[in-house]
Image 1 (cartoon, rainbow, N blue to C red):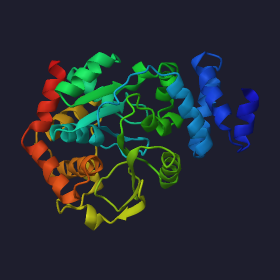
Image 2: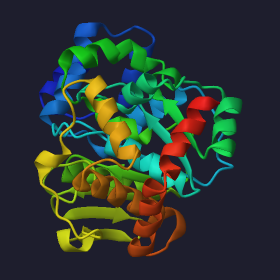
Image 3: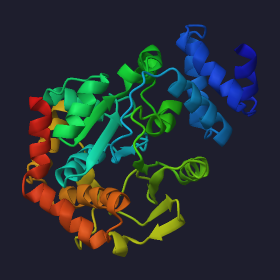
Length: 330
């Protein structure tokens, strides 16, 4: 391991096999805490290569708890995190809005590491019980339309390195890997990325899959659609550009200050419930609706305008909030 770290600090890169073997060694306790910190630090100085991401991902999926949810035409809405913007939980809210329209959502997430509040912090705080039981997850998808896969109970290696990630308090290679590791392997994915270089790497990787995807990056640095700037979007059809004007389906341009989350999980849960209850600010509502709109367009191929109307109805009618109520009642 010391030789590999030495090579990495000399700006050499790993092969797929080397990357895969490193994570397997971490899972077996063959790499100590200091070495693990060094490894995560390296990828704050440069982006991982396509080969490294593929190798790391293969190891994570090989080591994961398996569930088969492929009978559902579902979507995951997820971001890499690590953009340093401290936004409220936009992708999680968008997931409930999409489920409120009658579509299926397999949401994958975790506790916060580089942000104040992760999607798992929100759902746990609301009383959701994490499970990796396939039968329970299928029941949630059947009866509610949404299930949540808490990453650490599917990827045991994350428990090994979670303390390291929390101590560092900055984005790590696991921010990069997180959106690629949904154990439910949904057929559709809206994936937000915090930098353009990584968006392109994901795009190169996804071109070799059968996934139906949209990889989005707001050009002012957000890892989701925020209506604060133009976005780049990569889909199976290629690279696309959406101007801020095209994104303003609800005819509003958002001030970044209006997207700020709270100072702790309790405050973020309050924001989450206000928005889900239809009581969010105009900016908060429009941002979650924009992300839900893009997700719906992956699922049904309808126009952005029609899907915006569906998403808005889901939020304003209370259907999105009802998804949460039903999920917590199971």
